[in-house]
Structures are given as C-alpha cells and as structure tokens.
Amino acid sequence: MELGKRKEMILAAIVEQYVKTGEPIGSKFLMTALPISVSSATIRNEMSELAELGYLEQPHTSAGRIPSQKGYRYYVDHLMPKSELDDDERHMVESELERCAGNPEKLLSKAGELLAKITNCAALATTPTDEGATVRRIEIVPVGTRIAMIVLMTSSGVIKNGICRTDTALTVDMIENFHEICDHTFIGRPVADIGTVMIQTLVASLGANALAMSPLFVVLADLAVSATQAEVHLEGAQNLLQHREFNESVFDVMQFLDQSEKLERAVSAKKDNALSVSIGSENAFRQLENTSLIVGRYHVRGHDGGAIGIIGPTRLDYAKLIPRIEYLTDLVGKLLTDTFEE
Image 1: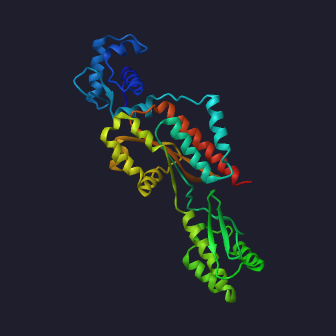
Image 2: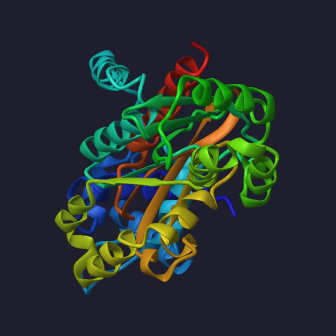
Image 3: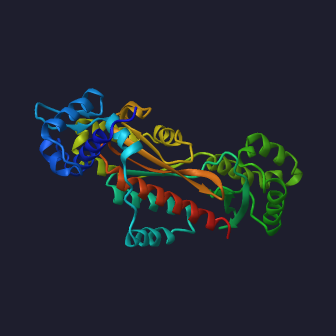
C-alpha cells in the first residue's frame, strides 16, 4: 500500500527527526519542518490516520508520535534518501583496509571494527563460504624436523593453515612427494570433496609411504572442512549498551551475539545479491525482534563470498548507514579479489 504524498512527507519527517532526537514528534514541529504549508489540525489528522494504519505509535499520553516497525519499513523502501560518503571518509576506510589487504582474516576483522566505529552498532563479517569453491593452492612449510605447517587456499579467498606433527622426520623427498600428490589430486577440485573417505583412499594408495605421509593429509582434510564453514568476526557488541531503546532486552541481544552458530544463520539467510534490511519482527530469531539487521554480501572473483553487516536498534539512521555498509562490502570484495588474483 502506498501512502499519499502528504502522509509520506509527514512520515519521513517523523522518522528523520526521531532518529536524531529519540523523542516523540508532535504537530508543532511538523508545521515548521514540512516543505508545504499545512495547518496543525490537518497534520494531527494525518498523524492519527498513519497511526491507525500502523505506521506510527504513541508511546504515552503525549500528542507526539514515533515510527513503528512498519513505519521504518515504508521509509526504507519508499522514502529514504541516501547520504553518500565524502572523500575524507572514503580515504579513511580505504587506507585502513588496504593495510590488511594481503591477509583475508585480518581484513574482515578490520572491516567489522571500522563498521562498528562508524555505526555505533554491533558489526559482523563472515568469512567466504562459497559452496562451489575449489582448491587453488596447497603449501607445506617445515618448521622443525617433525613439524610442518599446511596451508590451504581456496578460489573464494579462504586461507586456512594448521600445524602437523609427523612420526618420522620430514625429508626433502617427503615434501616434494606431498606437493606432487596435492598438485595431481586436489588442485582445482571442489573443497567440499576433500573428506575422510577421500583421504583414506589416498593414504591406502601410498604403500610404504603411508605411515609417514598420512598425518599431513589428515591435517589437510581438517583444513578443507574448516574452509567450508563460515566464521563470524563480531566487533563492537558493547556499543549496544549505549542505545536506550533496548532497555532490558539488550541482555537478550548480547546473549544472542555470543551464539556464533545462530548469528551465522541469521546473517547467511540473507543470500540475495542486494543489501538486506530486516526490521524488528522481520528477523527470524526472537532475541532480535527489537533490532534491525542490515546485511550486505561481498563477492570474490565473481562468486558469493560472505556477509558484512550490523545489528542495532530499529531507531537507526538508515539513510546514512546503508550506503556505508554497501561501500564497505564492495571494497572488501574488491580487495579480496585482488589478493587472490595476484
């Protein structure tokens, strides 16, 4: 349902002023804020109709109104202007992230840190989980006579590493043999294919080298499993304590943020390419019914990578925050793509 132009102007003015002040908005303010000349009585009638339609709420007996979740949704979908980043803000974000460009884990953590600072909300970033990712590179780095680090890199930008302890001393022949087997067996293959059955079959074919080589491939299989599972970097959760709208419900939200599996599910449910805004009860989890979840997807080498977003109160400056999340998401995808094309 679309509202008339006058109702839209009133709703937009109420949302934008309430975001600034956190105080109910009355007809006296609207008479001076609206770009058209309207009587106080007409404004009050329009506000009453907006309340009856569910777009406004009256928190107490005062004449002022505040936006409802439905009101915020209409504003975001139909009325919201976008406040783009200025050159100084773009430069700050770019310089901070470019310092981490060669380290995907650090890059995503820094992106969350910056977003938490910019938005004063809880910010999160998930590692890439492209289900069609393939093995791009595997390295073995000896760090002792019987200790090596195995490094796995996928086509979607994930890098995983793990320490392996062998029962026999690592030799040049073993390392070369490991590389040859990996190049022949794993490179270009879907990461999801590397599991216990495949490794057992491979080790059984190694003959006399099976005992010495099997620990290396067991660690590789563990890394492959880890690479297909999203990890959530959470930053700025303490920011939520500053938003008075939450009242006691902030403890439910904070508890939810500690449950990484649920948090990852809430974010990963937003799989379309466009930025997603879930307001209040639109969120799937009860603990988020008084929050807004804004999530953008970044892409690595043309494939779906992971998510970057924020969790905050429904009283957010959507016009300012959404462009910043979009910009940060695009920049992270570009930096990750550049890293894995080098």
